[in-house]
Image (cartoon, rainbow over all chains, first blue to last red; front, side, top):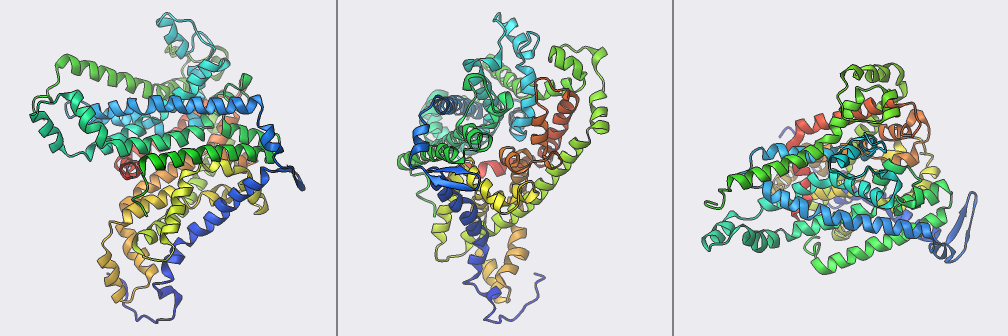
Length: 302
Length: 281
């Protein structure tokens, strides 16, 4: 060790073992107070206010009453359905792919892992440029060419609710498939091989091994992926932005975060935007509580 | 895994075929972007992108234009680089300090702080963007690099990661250094930081990716074109009747490139960085 031995002076705060941890955690405490606690309280207060430049006044639950409007319903519905679709696709599919890619019998599995992961590296906004070209409205656009091969009519992808939802879910699935495969692979590697060996000696086939060993032992990872997918779903904004910016026809691409942005920044109604934020917060919070109750995932920590 | 590991050749072929199909879907947008970047922007604007390799249309014109006329693109590149570099370095410093302290010290309030870290981790910060924006206005940080960096500088996920990693550090070293008269900070910076190198590697890449690709918060903070980052600048060119397709397409490709190169070099770190949170819990 190149450190020069020094006598402990005893009174210097720098040397105090008691003070040190508090100094180490001070960046978090500061950032928590300033950028989390204060804004959280502020959002709650603002949601009961009419926030105008220079003056604010309390208007009770007016903002919450205003939530009962078709735009908010559209945002809530789109976000919820989008989240459910991403759960339906982004849990079973990567799970099966991870089990396949975990088998040594599959040639080129490292190539496949990298290929699936590369989309996760890229900015949604930037790849959105090319997604708009692929899902262009012309019949010669790549996606419509594919439909033609399959004998299906071409689509105006960004004009209808169903195809619009498909675009958002597809972009998200494209981007996150490889990440979830990695999570599951890391979980699979933690399962002791002896379990499979003894199951084989008992004559268990591939399906029995999957349902009686792999799936139960992978439960913590599945729960983790489920949690981050739900949060990812409810905070979604960019997948919608790349196809419609902030104005989709008939709100087909409106999401809750997009609605906060619209109301807070574009319509300058921060009070109402905050009310939307609070609803989103409550949704996430309730999901959290259910999650903790059902799984007790974080009980061991701390 | 003796008998069952022998998969029937037909089944194996089907599986590999299916995997290849997924790989094509995963990589196709990159191929399409590459192809588009060599096509004239007028062609793309009028006829959209088709997959015909019309050799007579292909040229480097978009790239040449990008470097000759795309002065603002280069400014965005610079802005993205600065924000990514400064943000990554600071968030690594602060997050590692916090994570380390949570792992090695037994101090009053430690559990409370850890629970707070988990809480922040589980709340989407987009919910707080309105009051955060007002706060940044009062800090006079609108349209500055600091406005983008400061609120995201202490990253709960990185804290969590560093804590998990630091739990495995040998505590005896700590005691030995103390007997030698080392200050706690010296122990951290000259003994523990080098020991946590792999954790820094993984987090550096993840944090850099986060800053490089982030969009919503920078959009709120950065107001003038000369302050834009790449995703904001490029998304501004994304208009249906824009005449900026030459910058948009080749510029998008050059935006993705550094991250892909980084990935190729640090693949192992990337993967361990992503999986550490997943296996716990």
